[in-house]
Image (cartoon, rainbow, N blue to C red):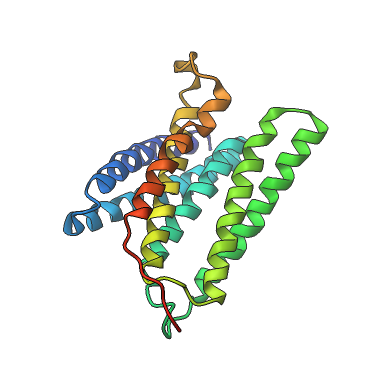
Length: 221
């Protein structure tokens, strides 16, 4: 069993490195659609491998941080992927059962994160509870937005592109966060708690600028 876990860790690290590299390349090629798509697919599959190995290893070794980041990152990854398949919700298209399944499972998971974070803050008085609490809250807000989109027709034409950009960059935030947190021993000059939020502090403003560039128009029904 121990040997299998070592192999899974190696695969996890390799896939994580691939995700960081190809994610950055995909962003750099975002205006070059022919090259952006295949690179984006490589990123998606790297993140899929990262997710599967992260869940197995985190459960086997009781690594809560790896479990939380694995779920948060892959939720964003798969929603970004599904957004490209849900481009006509303003028309006759309806979300599939898999879309509802993803949101329900994610919603329950994020609720668990929030509850766990609050429990740590109350019982132990540890600031470590802020991490699952904040990730859980942001996850729930995302689930709420996505379910609302399923139940109500979108209000703008390129809603799917904004969703793709937002969630894909959110996915990259998760991947980069996992990498930095694992480098805590090599980054003693940075507060460990700050490492959890540093990628978001840097990437979220960039994400907002990219989404503002999308020339989406209001839809009149």
